[in-house]
Amino acid sequence: MAIELVKKNYLIAYVQDSNSSEVVLSEALTPYIEDFNCGWVGTGNGVWSYEKPTQSYSDVYSVQGGHKYYLTLGSDVGTRFRVMFTTVDVSTVSSGKVNGTAVNKSNYNNPSPNQNLYYTTPSDGYIVVQKDNVGKTGIKTYLHDTITRSPIHCQFLGAVNDNLDSNKALAIVELLKSCLNSSVQVKAVKKIEGYKLIVKK
Image (cartoon, rainbow, N blue to C red; front, top):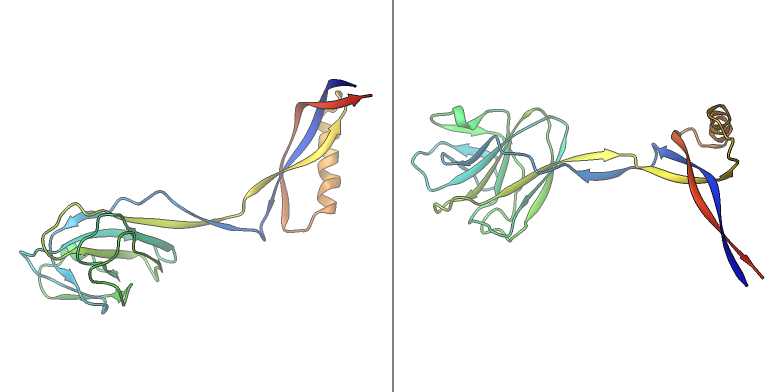
């Protein structure tokens, strides 16, 4: 028995199906203000109260409307995980209260490590995350934007002759399109070199 490697040319297509989607997270966003040391967030009521000096520390994020965000604590937590959304920049407020929307209405005191939540913003504004109320600084929070995308898959089409040119490749693509569902798009076609294993007895 002998084994022979024969050099061949193959055609592959990169296709995308708009009916197939996956949700991925962006890189962690940078807080607009980190360790904001003024005011505090109420217990699940979406109200921020001005207080200075205070032992409370918060991260403030500038966010866009209609986006679904994923917020998580890390392994190091404080005494609070009180989160609210507001259209008012609380860093510009010097007295009174700011009414917003409670993002979490439970588990807002003494949170567990890596406690998290999702929230879809109704408009542009700010997410305020109170992390502590006993003077602990440097607690990290992580806010990610979620991105929905249709993945691109590589599809093997078969072996082709050495003399395949771009016109022939385009003709193959047109024939391929006629066989596909309308939600599927051919993004690219590529000829690659490879080897076929032949076993001879």
